[in-house]
Image (tube, rainbow, N blue to C red; front, side, top):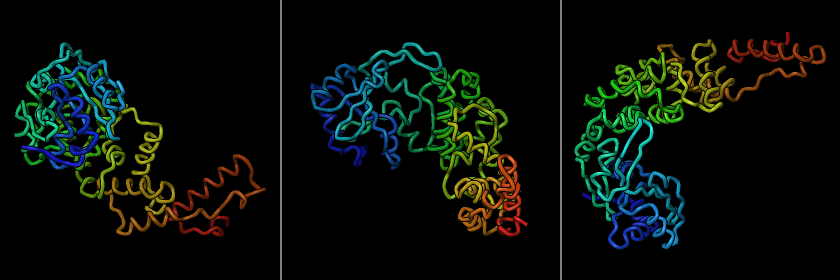
Length: 374
């Protein structure tokens, strides 16, 4: 079988393959680009594997006139920019030792050794520059069945890097077949290794959870995470029961909205702006504000998040909620500071404006300036 695509035929990519394949060296595409091409999904990241050492890769690429960046040279990875396309080129590797977060590796010339250290069989697929598929571990069958399965023994793969627990659920949400369910052996290994999640950096955990929650339908994966005890380890108190109804109501996924509905308390290393947005969403889900009032207070997108979250939790939204949010977003609070001065100044002025704003919001933005000032 062969894959094809504009990314594969790109002049810079093929020129890099020719340069790195000099004197019989092997250069192969691997992982996400091969997997996505086979699944007819967009290809973004170009990962490549080679039997050339990082020093050899750098010399061959520089001699061919390409820009080389030693981004992960300690781990065998070199970034090469060829014809404007970014390629991550990694030497074949085998694990020497792991601690659940990082691995000590040795370079290899054997594709089978390189494949054996990867996480899932669908990520252990390789392709030659011609597009010809190489499948050293039988990943094609799993890919065709939309089955996310660990390479070799799941518990061993997880002990090498406990983040693979979260990747397992995320990959099931993105690539798995909900009808056939999650891989039982992998799920059992994730439950057994869940304690290892506590040693991961919060940045890595947050990055994975963002991706999982942005999947088309993360509900089955989140339910499996809860059943296995994994969800409670990273988001204590989280409850995924409202995610499925929310997905049904959505026209497009937003991880922020889903996280607000999921609940739970955990450090996902959100940015200050993301944390503030999440707090606002959670506060307003339980508030009495109308769609119009939410549109004025939050803006169209966050107000939409709140209404959809409420609906997923069983709170009825008016049939005109979308137009009401738009009305609110376009509205202007009819009272200004000048209307209250000079009678009020400083903190007293701010308090009065806040009181009038609350009255206006409670009126569904119907009170006029004259009514508010009377």
